Length: 169
Image (tube, rainbow, N blue to C red; front, side):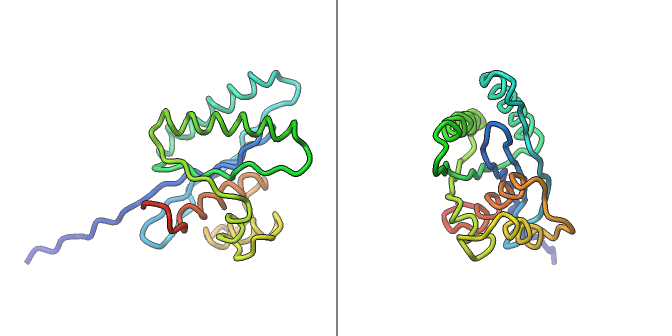
């Protein structure tokens, strides 16, 4: 009798929390119903640099991250702003880079509102940044809260994507 091992589908999600000054990123892997931490970080740019240089640096760094971790999908926090329109415009430009990279690398892009991400991670759409960080650490079995906040939010987007019923994985 020959026993065949089951093929376990492993999905890698790159979560992104877009921003021009600070873009959080986090990579998780999903196998069955389990989610495993892979890596996280933050891409930072200086306000003293020209915006096109900053956007170019973000594009180049994200390209390296995509080529390193080879995600099967991208999960991004959708644009949210309340007062600062100028800041929102820069975030929109960074989101454009993310969409272009998803297209270039033939990766599906899933967008989630901050409320949906917080509900998926904490069970509470009004959770604060500290609570999100704590739950991200708990879900991924990390001994510390991922820092900075933008990276924790990016991991939250990736977790949300893994648990979202609409994800085709």
